[in-house]
Length: 120
Length: 120
DNA sequence: GGCTATTACTTCCCTTTGGGAAGCATCTAG
DNA sequence: CTAGATGCTTCCCAAAGGGAAGTAATAGCC
Image 1: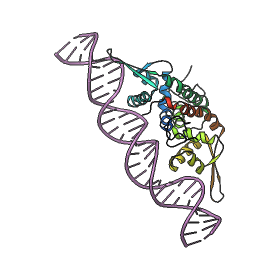
Image 2: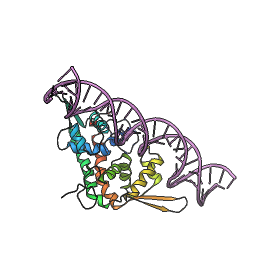
Image 3: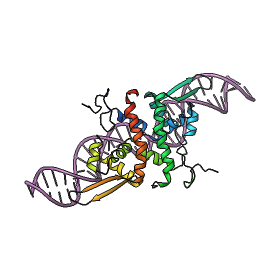
Image 4: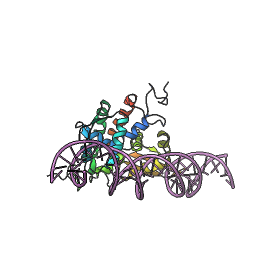
């Protein structure tokens, strides 16, 4: 008998179930900035400033928020090198590399199909 | 010479460029409710009420907003059957079916990997 | 010593978006 | 003539998004 993921543990999980923790994770991952940050980190560990330059138009506040949430959930590692000036590197974890694939597929789809999408 | 998508037309598009219309599309598609709506519609055309029941916890307002935006951009068709009681069907367009694949990959990844993700 | 530069953030503040509760419009059946 | 079904819309508040400016630590330069 399936419990549709209400208790969490070893049942099948279902993003369509309101109480499934899937929902929170989907909300974190299915976001513009998350998709861009994870994509940028696919090229290897990067520093805050580098990410800021690559993700054109991102404010430091939003970038920090995004990175912190990804770190909390275990998608990204944050390493501080207390050199001077301060040096902080962000890198994908194993989990982060895993989710990078579906996110890359989504970004790629958007770039390939943009011309067919009605502009609003 | 590449223009990095600033003018739109037939250059390569780049989601990392601030002015690329890709950004808006990515923002629409990379959203919790979009991923769930498109996924539900993969099973065939469905009515407002059916969608509301499948996407547990969605409010009618948010569902309407999501469907309208997807319709505007050409991912979803809205058909009204003026029978009584009123009958409205939502269906994926060709474009919608296309993007359903990467979105399904993302949802599937979340369901398969939930147990490895740090709960916060 | 004082000034500037660098890196990585915070903080402030305002606008936009998200989201629940409740109301509305239309028509039928009882 | 009231109740029920369907597909919304409106209201309101709280949460999130996002830009501008400020902060902290230290090094190097004059």
